[in-house]
Image (cartoon, rainbow over all chains, first blue to last red; front, side):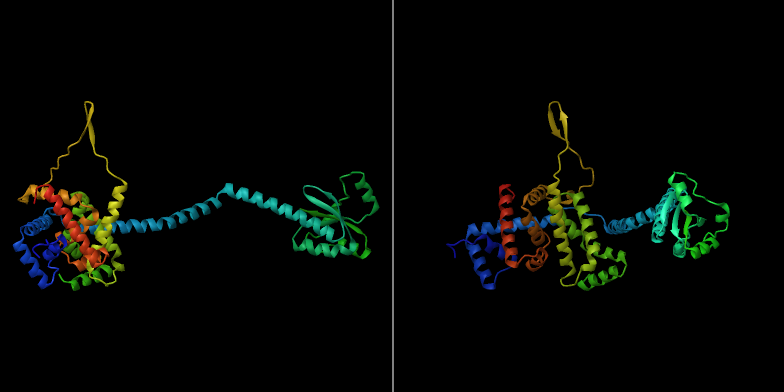
Length: 224
Length: 190
């Protein structure tokens, strides 16, 4: 063993006592007899002793309990707050949205919009119902639609108009004369006040019944 | 304070008594601080990191499954926290403060007026040199020598904390010691 020096791993293991009893005896015997290995081992011991001495070299530290736990609590609170931010934002948006819906400006626009839609759908519905009653459109103005339908289809038209609560009235049951006037471009379609006055807005009128019995063409004014 | 005490404290903390964690902090703060200090060689930085480590431990306490000793689990968090911090720090390297004197730029010398704990150490030069050399060690060596030769942990504990096998632990310890010994020899300390 004297001819072969101990390597660093063996010296390190000896220092840590990570050797068997037999190895220890051999290593110690060698170190005692070999000046080079002894010097190496002493250097290692000194190095590790200084390293161990560094344990006290980083100074004292204050008690960290209070600060650490306070910081932890602050972080928890912050995290909870950040978690609730989306909910708060959503609530604010909902409240703002509801508030906006209740503003006059929004209501005006909404009313205008729904009126437009309603008008369009009513006009379409009126035209469709006249066509379904085998009738024809005579005149369309901003306020009403005049149509002419066979007397036998009055009941059907009446049902549709009543269902949609559309105001209507029979304005004439004359035939060729009225057509002639309309062909000449007159706006007057023979509306008679007593005719509309006698008509029920949503109910069955006497004119309707009479026309139905006769089977004549009936002119009807349907209000938008 | 025994291992059972750690478990009792953990139960209390998990039961909502956060203040009970102060026992854990008092018990381990010196060791954790020392390890961190020798990893970064900066007192203030080490204090902040130590606090962060304990907060991390507190937050992760619910995930401690009692498969190892609490101290081993805590040291694992400590080692990983330091590794992550080092990575982050390397990404944002610091720029030394300089002032212009004439045509030359000179480093600003900031004097530390706090009470210097090292004054109590008799051999100040030796300590300074060993600190410098610890700071210059490669990260792997510094990490393992801190655990083994400064904190006096066993090979098995180190193996558990670092998550490497025993033979690797031994190899790293040997290489680290040899490296440090040669450095100290070069500096004329041994």
